[in-house]
Image (tube, rainbow, N blue to C red; front, side, top):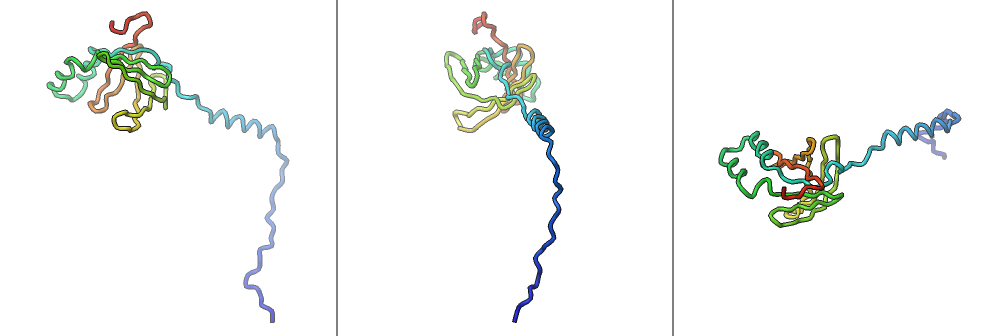
Length: 164
């Protein structure tokens, strides 16, 4: 005795429309996709060079915060602002304060007309951090996140001595 199948296999062919491909259109579409997807690499150009902390301008930034008068007095004292010099090369920066020099690698992750966003590893914690540095003319504003204000740096010209 022969068993009858419970379900018959599907035998209806699915029609596939066949079109001749216009390779010129495909090439043009490919070029447009590549142009649309290509974004320029972030550039550190405004960041490069030597910068000196500007104490009076930084203290104006401190005045915009909700810090107490006692905290503002401490920050306006010696050892906080106006003494640090930073030199940015491509991929590394040198920080100098009171004769102590440290080098740190960084990577530009984003940039625009008036900002550069960098990423680096905190040597104390090993944590990867990001910082968005803002530019206003020959001024660089570096955020101090824990206190909620910017430390302001002034660009040091090539013919100007760093301690000026």
